[in-house]
Image 1 (cartoon, one colour):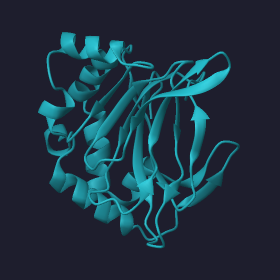
Image 2 (tube, one colour; image 1 turned 180 degrees about the vertical axis):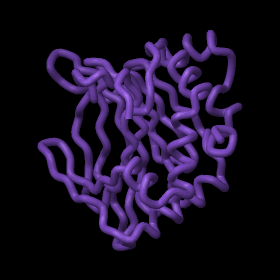
Image 3 (spheres, one colour; image 1 turned 90 degrees about the horizontal axis):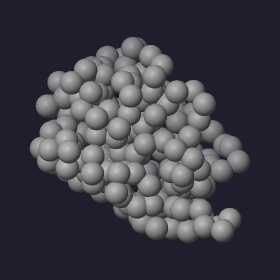
Image 4 (cartoon, one colour; image 1 turned 30 degrees about the vertical axis):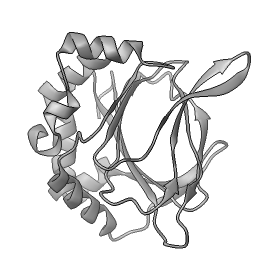
Length: 214
C-alpha cells in the first residue's frame, strides 16, 4: 500500500545513515523537504474525494490561527475507499519504522490525521507543535495537484534574542512532503493565503506520530 501512495525512492532518497545526517544537520531545526514523494494518481484520487465529502469542514479560530479542519481518521472509518487507503499507508509498519529511523524517534504510531484548509486571508502564526502528549514527529502532505492560490508559504523560524527570525521557507508544491521532529525549537508559521477571488484554498494533510495509539 505504501508503494502506491508514496514514491519511495523520493520519500527515502538515500541510505538511512545519509538521511539521518541530512535531517539532523538541517537548519533551523531537524527537518526534510521531499519533493515528488507522493504518487500522482493516488493524490488526484484523494484530492477529488476530499472535495466530494458531503459536509462542511469545521472552522476553528485560536490565538495564532484560523482555518478549516477535518478529522481524516473519522472520515476513513465512515467513507472507506481512498481515505482508508491513506490511513493504512500511514500505519504500514515498515514505513513507520523507516520514518522513525529517519527522524530519530523512538517507536511510534500514527496518532492523528487531520486535513487543513486555509482560505483567503487565513494564516498560521508561529508555533512549535511541541506538546506533553507523546507526539514526536509529523508528515505534512501537499495533496493539491494544481494549487490555485498564492502565499501560504511555510516559514521555518528560529528564536534569537527574543525575536523570531525566518531561516528557511517551504513553498507549496504538489506531491511534496515535509517531515519534522517536534521540539521546543521547531518553530514554524504559514503566511496569509491569497486566492484572488477564485474560492480556492490551501489544502494540507497532517499525519502526526507518537507513543500513543490511535
